[in-house]
View: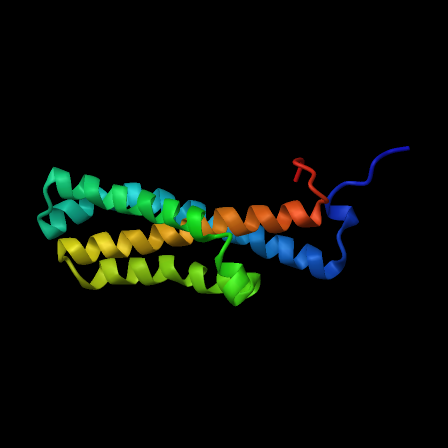
Length: 139
């Protein structure tokens, strides 16, 4: 007997949710790639030195790490859905901040926000897909 695929085992509501999670992965990939692409332009436009550019990339990674540490606690306080929605707004807020300011510390804060959002997508999406698949690593 052939095993049923992950997508065929989902209810229509869960299939819709998984589609949205995959869309979040796509958006996450776009803004992570954009950071590397826009950093040289930001350095020129805002007159940032090499060390500040490295600090910006580090802030993004630190934000990702912070979310990795806090991702398990936030759903206990706010619920999984609220935690996911709150943290997924942060990358957009971070990129909006980079559009309106050139102050180095504000830019560091903005990229910290994008890193927090990136970590949220990775952690919560993996958790939800793992739950829906019954712990199977295939999806």
